[in-house]
Image 1 (tube, one colour):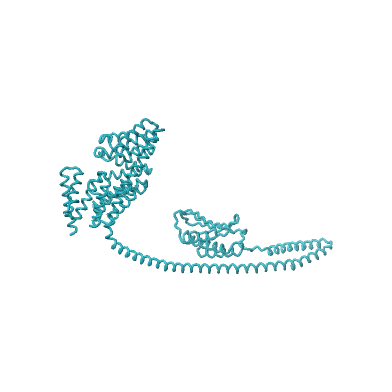
Image 2 (cartoon, one colour):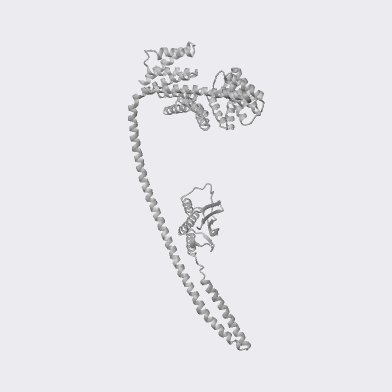
Amino acid sequence: MYHLRFFTTSLLFFLFCIELNAQDRGSEYLIDSIQKNILNSPKSNDSLLIANSHYRVGELYRYAFKADSAYYHYHKAEKYYKKLEADFQLARVLYGIAVIQKNEKDMTGSELTSVAAISILEGLDETNEIRKYKSYVYNNLGLVFGQLEQYDESISYYKKSLNLKQKLSGDNELTVIKSKNNLALSYKNAGIFDLALKYYSQILNTEDFAKRFPDIYALVLDNYAHTLFLSNDFKNLPKLYFDALKVTDSVNPNGYNSIIINQHLAEYYNTINNKDLAKYYAYKAKDISEKYHNDDLLKSLLLLSKIEQGEKAAEHLKTYVKLSDSLQKAERSIRNKFARIRFETKQIEQENIRIAKERMWLLIISVVIVLASFLLYLVISQRNKNKELQFIQKQQETNEEIYNLMLSQNESIEEARTLEKKRISEELHDGVLGRLFGTRLSLDSLNMNNSVDAIKTRSQYIEELKTIEEDIRKVSHELNTDFVSGSGFVDIIKTLVETQTLAYGLSHELDHHDDINWDSVSNKKKIHIYRIIQENLHNIYKHAGASHVKISFKLKNNVICLKIEDDGSGFDVNKAKSGIGLKNMNSRIKEINGTLLINSEKDIGTKVTIEAPIP
């Protein structure tokens, strides 16, 4: 029944408007007729007909640039459409309100109203009509953000509008051209001149464009020329400006569209320092824009303040400031009227407060339940993570305890070895060496026999004993030197490398410098170095397909330099994914305040360099 009534009242309204238009009367008569016959008639009780009538009057006032009257009727229509739940009509009237708000510089209000219209349209089945109004709303948002100089958003909305318009059925060439021009304008204002020129060229190359749409052609040609000017390409200037001016004057001599072209000509001549022509076109733009008393007059006055000098420049600037204040006051006045109109709807909206509160409480309860469930999930999840972390931590502590025990055992062995060496050294020095020394003296005393053979024989024994003495002294000295100091950690590394490479089928080379005092390195740091080598060997086996690995330790400026090289397949370091192995290595490097550098070439191999300071 609702759809039938909707169709009937819409048809009545449509026929009514056709009848009025057929009489070839002006818009003022049409507005008066609608108000007299429908809006003010006591017999009119059809809400949809009244709503459509308010919308039609609002449309007529909007095109007549009577913002306050248009807003009033739009708002009346909006209230009726909301009650009737006529979503498409509501979105359509919101678009009209958004356009008025944008024209009156209420950019925030226009943006919010446009978003409300889009939200409604997005929830409807997409027909050609709905697609058309979505494109209109997106175009309005592009204009809003363009006025706010937020060109990225402006470009984004223009593209959405253009995409929708290109999908519309019927002849939509002109509206597509306008969207392309708006998009190019945002690119120009954003300084992206190449894309702006691209779209302007597409429009200008449209077949018979100048003949079919001369006024639009002139604006596009002027924008194209101004883009060339901003990109410092003066080759075809000012000819293009004059071509655009010629076309627009052929349609409407000294009309509104010629203002911007004259401003651009003044700007061009001022740039090339031709002050006379700059003043001529600037004053021409000012004279034409005075008929409209709007932003174009402001731009003309500001331009003249830059071109003129001395008192004239100051006078134009003063007029500019005065006019700007006046326009701002007028805009505020209009916006205040809009606010008062909105305020009047509060009484009607009170009827919906109870329902709104019930829905709000239902929503709050739902949100609380959802949040409580989510928080419960987080708590349980966090507990599981904490247990997992505690297990990992205990495992790490166990590893460290085992490793520390290994180091302690190794230190005990080294200490026993050192004591044993010292004991052997003392016994060699005090026992064997002493007896040999006594024997040498005895032989030396028997050397009093002067026979040739005796002397020769004893001399040989004495020399032999001297040799033995020196060898024993050397062994004693070497044994007494604690040359294995710190070798415990190196032995562990050797064992690791030998075991791992044997298991992985790799040949290896281990090079370490004895100048590293491992005793001064903390166990924590040793553990991390041990694990890093272990992880690297595992990665080489798993990913590199290498046959040989070389590991070296060096000490540079109290920094331990560890290098691990393989002859594997290599990889692209920049494109490689960071797996858990590499993450663990980075975590360990961070723990020891070190650095990690990976160099790799495909089919050559990989070199991992780790530097860790000793302190």
